Image (cartoon, rainbow, N blue to C red; front, side):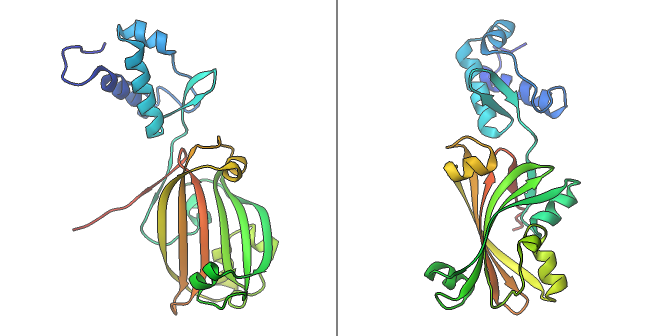
Length: 240
């Protein structure tokens, strides 16, 4: 029952109750929730109170809505800690998930001024442009576009980039990948992201730009990624 004498708002009490059911596994991914009316009648609270609790849980990623069908429990988000440089393939395998890629585009193009600057090469120098959908257990997680200097990393093929790019660079090219810098921003899905990631246009995404460097300090890769905000989150430990 909701405690109407508690200093905690009723919507917050309902939020915590639903969140607890999800975290204990009593409500599982894809389970549907009772309607606003059913919650209101069960706990003797207003539908507006219920709606606020549901809205907050949707924003936090615990729930999602299907138009005309109600609210459902979301899949648990994949958490990536921002310590150490790992590839998507390595990251998913560490979580016991099967990584895969769906190659959308592979071409050698002349570098524009932005790409050239990021890779430390001359404008119009050849670069690989690689666009892939990154999947975990066949679920789309990210739309990723890589730009790699073709004079530095030689011999890339569609078959190679459909698997682990970092593994090829380190094992076959005998180059040591050392570190990267990342910028993470919140954004919303456009039509391209919507189609690739099976999400609604306007849904929240995490937009990431990463520059990756070899042991000798030479930049070899610039990556632009759009991650599903409903399936992915990043955490960082900060020490004073």
